[in-house]
Image (cartoon, rainbow, N blue to C red; front, top):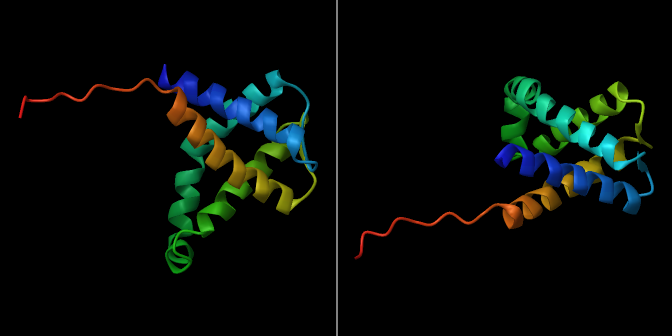
Amino acid sequence: MNFIIRLLATAFVAYGLSTVLGGVHISNFKTAILFALVLAVMNVLLKPILIILTLPITIVTLGLFLLFINTLIILIIDYLMDSIRFDGFWWAFLFAVCLSVLSSILVSLLQPKQKSSESGF
């Protein structure tokens, strides 16, 4: 259930960003759902490899290089999917940053609150 919530939240935010950002073009919500699914697969398969390969530069930049890795993954998806288009690196970078922040906020709002077990003290 958590995966579906994250997938739909990412698709919703991605489609919303494509209407707001002029350099991001996602044709419809169905394409946004497919984008979110491909992004999830890329984050599981490709992102860990890229993080390990670029670990020294990520440490030197105090983690800011991870934004570049996210942008690179977005641009790879742009290359793989015909119905999604970014007008350049900086549009993909802005999209990646906004997508990360906004989808994290939306997922935290949509996830059901878990009750903490209190021992009575």
